[in-house]
Every structure is written in C-alpha cells, then in structure tokens.
Length: 131
Image (tube, rainbow, N blue to C red):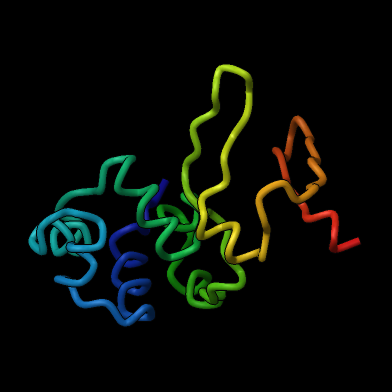
C-alpha cells in the first residue's frame, strides 16, 4: 500500500492558499511539524488528520491514499463540504448541530428536519423545507 499523504498535504495547502505558518496556526501545530508532514518525514496523528479533512473538505481516505493526480480534480468549494466536525451525542441520543453548519444550510432552532439512516452508508439530515 502506498501512502500519498505528504504530496496530498502539499497540494491541498497550495490550492487553498495557506502558508506553512497559516496552516500550522489553524490546526494548532508548529510550522516545522507541517513541513515534516509534507516532506514525508512524519505523519499527522488521527486528531490532526480529522482537522485537515475538515479544513480541506476531503475524506480521510482521499487525504491519505488518493493519488495526487486524482486529488487535483476534487472540488474544494465551501458549498460542497463533506466533513463538518465531530459531534457529541447526549445520553438521550441527541446531537446539536454546530452554528456554522446551521448557518451554511440556513437552519433555525426548532426547524423540522428529515433523518435518513442506512446501516452501510450512515446518517443524513435534510431540511424539510427543501421538499
């Protein structure tokens, strides 16, 4: 198995317009740490991979494994986000959507949403006003 994470990190940072310093500050690591990741001298831990996938709006598989030539074709627009963060589930099984996600989809507290669930694909939440 060939990891492509070093090249992918360089490409994603470049395409997003971040400097080493900008990216390091955003994900709370040193500039040297980011440089080592991009040089293939070390790899980000899982928590930092989650931060990077959220920032760049790619899946973990795309970040780590996708060949560079394929990754270049992925859209990075804010409208096409894929990962919006990690949520805590209460003891009652409820989750609270982060304000940026609610703003992105123009959702208001108390609004009705449709919950879709598939054991193989996961869970999706859709605004009922879209129907």
